[in-house]
Length: 204
Image (cartoon, rainbow, N blue to C red):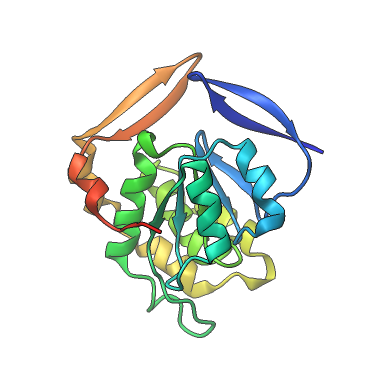
């Protein structure tokens, strides 16, 4: 058993769930989760999160079983195909793709959202690391979080990508980002560009 925070009726509530979490599952930010690739044994747990969206960071087609689960639960899939490689991941993480994925995360209309790749370590770690930079985390804390999830598989090239990622490429979006305070000190980010929803949406 475990406790997970979900949003219901505009407020956060604690829900006790039977363990069936994907590996590397964690809360990133209010309304944003991360994990490895979920399978059917994780579906009951994912239902408890009331997800609206999934950000999938692999180029391979989404499995039929997972696609059916999304359809049955009204979950939208955003696919950003980033090639995985054990040799030079730094070369293969496209900045433009990460930028587009960040726009999806910033839009609270997509929340609650789950980010995942295969293991929930490298591609997911790069995306979350860039989100942390946008949130003005210090670099040492960003890299510490990346290393926590990557463990012994941490890659210096991934960390270099995060370090060099220029968040100023998203500054033009900040004019459309509003901070929504709900409850006691809860901050929300919303990206207000309707055309963004036309990009990189996978339908199954």
